[in-house]
Length: 541
Image 1 (cartoon, helix red, strand yellow):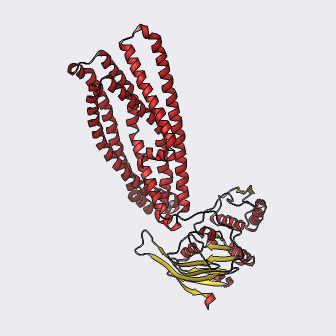
Image 2: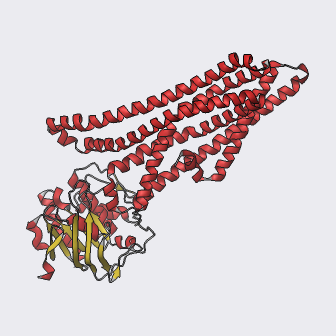
Image 3: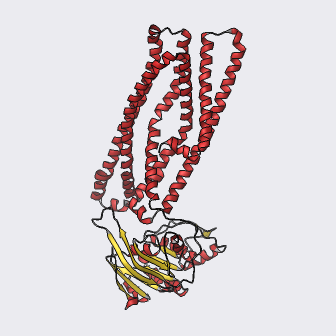
């Protein structure tokens, strides 16, 4: 998908208006050149007034249509960029979590940041390039009308030159594709720098190994291929400039001895070529930027197609029923495809029934499938086999969004928002302030208009703020994935002996993934996983 098709998809009518206005601008510019050339070569005094009026009229038409074309294309291009950003964000939101995890954060970030920025930068210069192209076409039309035989000779020469430029250009484009692939890996290493900085600082050998054998190698490959591609584009630009000068020299020095060319025709050709130098230079010099944007658009399109294969149906869900009776998992399985795993991890088949008001501990060793089961329970992962039934209603694509509204979950890799998004309770600030006091954060955080004064706290305190959000959501079922792991002993005991007990006493179902065996006795049920299977369920004993 190239830039023109990208813009055309936004509004073909606006593109048509821009093309018509640009063509008028280019035609008027060419007519101005013809008028100037004719006046310079002949200078008929009897036409002096008409020439002035003609010049003024053409200049006004050229300037006006130039502005109209640019204004339309600027609005159109910015709207296209806006739509692309929103479409990408929507596609990511609508994609299955498992697929997003397989794509990886570096690839998603590279597309959302660098690819979109490359397209944005190219789109910003596109209106001016369209005007330059219109001027070039208009001037070439004038040259054809001025002396068709000379034009045909120059056209043949330009075709040969263009074909040679195209060969160099294609080599550069292939290298840019390689550069873009290396950029995904570079983003992965940058993520290591930001998220693993403490571990890298603590171990000199690890840090040097990472810098020299990972980061530097990838960055060097990226630099080398970028230099090669941009050098090829520079050759294309220089060759194009040489072709233009050669054409001027051909007309000026060679053609008069080969053809019977009048001084007026020569003057017209020289003047037109001189006028063409700036728009031609702009067109050629922006080839790298346009090509990079084309590669970025292909990457964005590929990601979009990939996401569309795993798109979930998202519609405004009805409110959840707070008087539900049972949540059943019948033969549910899920296959996790890890990128570096020798074999797939299979969770299940899971047979499990959950009731309102239960406090259930989900336990097991590392890698036993606890977090995968948690994502299945809340509807973030989709079962490959088996059924999930809420009050005997099978959860399918059509009602999965509704099903998810039953859950408030805090995962081990949680994200903390600084505003209570989606909550419209008029007493929100008052309720939140009361919960802050219970969570022992009222001296550190204030709330105004549903916004937290700060989230720059310790990990344990940030988890308490996430618990505050879960309280305010007031969902029927709560899930906590190793929530207490970052809490001090005092607050950890408060969590197990008071906070989750209060939720259960309110009729909430509470699912807790935990390794804190000293608190297992507080649970109504214990579900133990081992290698993806339910090894033990205390409700069945």
